[in-house]
Amino acid sequence: MSGKILRLPIILLLAFEFLLGCTTSGESPEIDLTFDGEKCTARGPDFIDVGDLIVDLDKQADGVVVVYLYRLDQGKTWSDLVDHYGPAGTFALPPEWVKGMSGRDVGGDKYDRQYDLDPGIYGIVCMFMGPETNGTWAATSIEVRQASGY
Image (cartoon, rainbow, N blue to C red; front, side, top):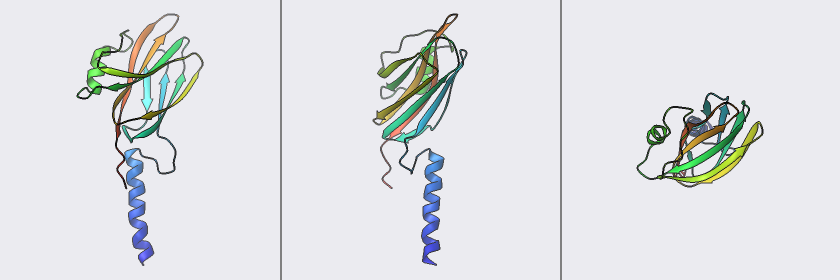
């Protein structure tokens, strides 16, 4: 009987971690970006614990995509970053209230990069330079929090 009682909290904990986007297998959480020349879409967790994050990009357009991961200054939000960049595809330089983690040209079709992140709110932005269009797309944000300690 005690084995059944012990398994239920473990199952609930694993389900809770899965729903929150945490991993229990030692794998790093991942954000998958797709850029098709008209939009940059993202799929992944909304928040993670301090540590590694993998960003993958599937580039489906001719041209160069630069993926930026910015840490927003305290008090700034994802909405502030989206407002700064304006309509998707408009070119804009980063605001002064972000700390650039990286900008990397993606000349090929795939991009895979691992980051080690401290607590904070981060924005992922795609900048595109193509034969017929140039612009900036705010893709997604992620909150990095201190580990919960369970």
